[in-house]
Length: 219
Image 1 (cartoon, one colour):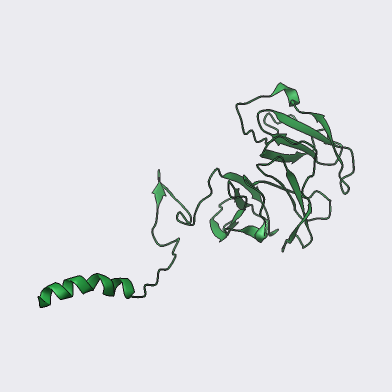
Image 2: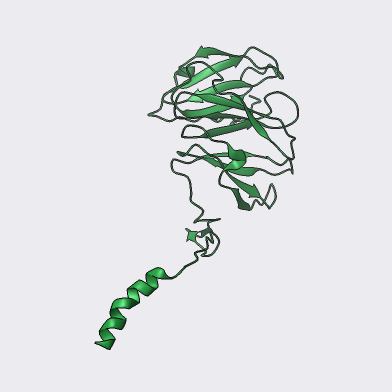
């Protein structure tokens, strides 16, 4: 009978104990196809959207991840431009929160020498956060939560000077590419809808645009 009492009371004693769990995202190395993942257990981002920007003006690109939860994760580059090494800095960068499907694009939209933020969400909004800090220490403040009328539902804002007039124009992606021309100036933008079917480009869904001079012909 004495043995039976011990066995019956042991689970109760275990439940009553105080246990302390520590979150250690770097505790277990994880490799995928020979690549060691940085912070593999830091939570990830469902429906993730990557972006790069030199957010601290130290000469190398840092790495951002948007996603379903409407926040931005920041991975600071502790390496160099040629040999980057990304370390998790924040799971909730600058407390920025949109409805869902955060899709960031960093550009100096007001020509003041630091990066501003345009971000798309999953509910037909393109939001503008002006950097009220500095290039080295940014502070993003929401200035406009409806930057352009009738953007496509959720994806892919991109800023590029498509007409070579010295200011950024805006593209938004979904099934097609929507093009807004900047009729303002490099420091005072004004986006006007040109077409919601740019160049007849169409994909299945969730298009995100990226422009580069792929053939090195100057455009």
